[in-house]
Image (cartoon, rainbow, N blue to C red):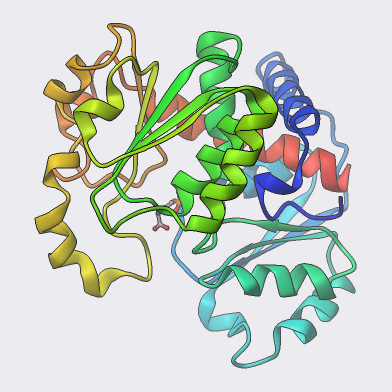
Length: 305
Ligand code: CP
Ligand code: NVA
């Protein structure tokens, strides 16, 4: 596999190997640093949308391996506007060793991968966020030492983050439940793929429209913004629909006593998550954000190493 565009493209075994690699790279980094295996290697990072975690964790991952990263802003590249995606892919393939791209339309990262002769990593598209999912799995894995049989509940919008989380849970044997408002489902095609993976791993996917019912028996509660990047014109409408899906103390009390709460960030405190939950004892928000660094390293080693 040349690229990392979706969790769905990888077998359960490969994903577990990447998780093990992330754990090992994290240990190595903690006890003195990673080996400079990417000396003289450069990652080009194309961004059509803003980013803190994805941008900085990929850049730092490359530096920790002795390599470098280039940030290419929306204005600089004009992906598919100033220049065709196929041309950008072929030009960059002559300069750098891998491309990470954050795009609006998932088809655009697929097109980049099709034309690039170097690995392409999806740093978030409207369809999914596979790098996030690997860091999420790492965080859950560290907490529970195994993903099999856990109950992972996502509360909120059936968006890109929900899709990748569902797919990685189904691949690694966790039961995945979503509680989302009516009309804000994950794409039907993504659900079908998830159900197939769940059947293979012996796990379950449950689709609900009630937050309290969804978190019942949850080991993990996960939430994300009500309004993803690119959907800003729907913000007002969503602010009226989503409040029953807020992750607050009352909702957390409906789950298992030792439930952990996760959020890919950036958080909209007071909307999808309250301050007491985000900063409380169940929260794993910042270890999860930190794990982006180690998950990106495992992805880079797999594709570029
Ligand atoms: N979670 C995440 O991808 O954060 P950024 O948008 O800041 O990269
Ligand atoms: N669902 C969010 C994730 C941000 C990291 C978005 O796409 O804006």
